View 1 (cartoon, rainbow, N blue to C red):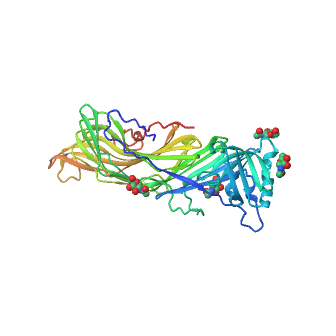
View 2 (cartoon, helix red, strand yellow):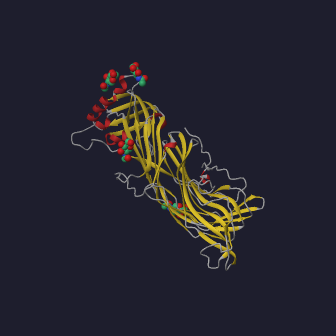
View 3 (tube, rainbow, N blue to C red):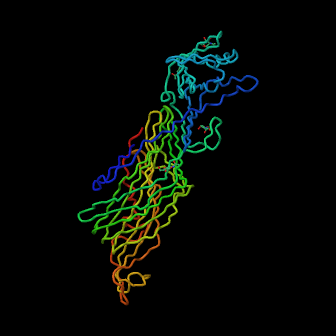
Length: 503
Ligand SMILES: *[C@@H]1O[C@H](CO)[C@@H](O)[C@H](O)[C@H]1NC(C)=O
Ligand SMILES: *[C@@H]1O[C@H](CO)[C@@H](O)[C@H](O)[C@H]1NC(C)=O
Ligand SMILES: *[C@@H]1O[C@H](CO)[C@@H](O)[C@H](O)[C@H]1NC(C)=O
Ligand SMILES: *[C@@H]1O[C@H](CO)[C@@H](O)[C@H](O)[C@H]1NC(C)=O
């Protein structure tokens, strides 16, 4: 997979990536219905050469079902297309060779119609048609085999047509097409009974272990997630439109289904950190079962889970525990135009956020935020051309800490009126970012909300006093315009690895 994320040099290889080979869901041809053959007055229109033809493929495993729909357009006056599946029952014999195919039909009437319909090929030197032999028609393989036919000879005695031309491949014959790949549409497809739709499994436990960082001399940072996980799945659809070999539209759409993320880090700091630092580390890469249609498309999604830590400036030695649960709305939808990624659209991604209790073990001031970056990446190869696209979903939990020194008692709700205290400003947010190959990275959503503040008292209890001093800190409570490093910048999501180039 392409997750060649450069780790921060200071991190070292603390934990190895978990990865296992993904299986591809192999889509098989869904045979086109035969046209007109059941009507009483024989209708042989299925033998006619066409300028447009649609092919479907479908497949399922225990969890997923997917469908591909390829519509091929024959633009040129001198080319047509013929799908043998459409009159399969008229064919009594089909022999396929490298440069010809010999086809026999079951009636004189059908053969008369065939001669009328196909002789166009003989009328001009350059008239050709693409013939697609269905799964199992040419040989026992379950692929559709394209041919380019440039001449036809007839034997009326045996109702046999000898088609002269070349065996070809989809890459050559499909120059102008629309291709859609995604879950099964709810409308029934006669041939199969698919109960599930194709979705990216987003139910995973993210085990950080103990993420230990030697930030600078004498400053150590640790991050531990006691129970960080994600739930749900993403439905997706991919569409591409190509004219004469040049893509003129390609898009990827994702919808969350029951997606939530729970992040509950404990972050420890030993020493004073004078600057803001950002760290990122990949903890888990999960290849998702891909989808492939022989010779047409291969789609290999993967999800990489990274920890993203933004920390500092921080003064004090303490551990900080915070937590957040984010839930995405099932109505959310995100579409990225792979040819013009800045045209991404996203609706409904504002998460529902619930904060857990936040606590600190000692006096500390500054700010820290920990996120789980879920990078959902797609490597797509369509008719020999590759591209990659991805979204980065980054739910995060953070806290701003202000140390207080007050002779009246630092925290108003503290019955013991401790002189020292820490005012906690927890916040939670989500960033959603799309990227397409090396071309562009677009921030789709950037939401941060402040959670109720809390105050923790430390030191010896007081009885009476005078003034309150908030120890100055360089970070502030999050606001949209704040220059505070943690909540308002998109620092946590700007470290995406360059993606492989495309097209
Ligand atoms: C396949 O795509 C074509 C053209 O985009 C469309 O007209 C047709 O309804 C689609 N078929 C299915 C089964 O989705
Ligand atoms: C097919 O077309 C060729 C060239 O125009 C013509 O000579 C031939 O008679 C036609 N055959 C039939 C069966 O129509
Ligand atoms: C096919 O041949 C005809 C007649 O020679 C010519 O007018 C036409 O441009 C040719 N078409 C192609 C696609 O070469
Ligand atoms: C999703 O992945 C998790 C973790 O690998 C697994 O336990 C779960 O069964 C999967 N769910 C589906 C629907 O495949």
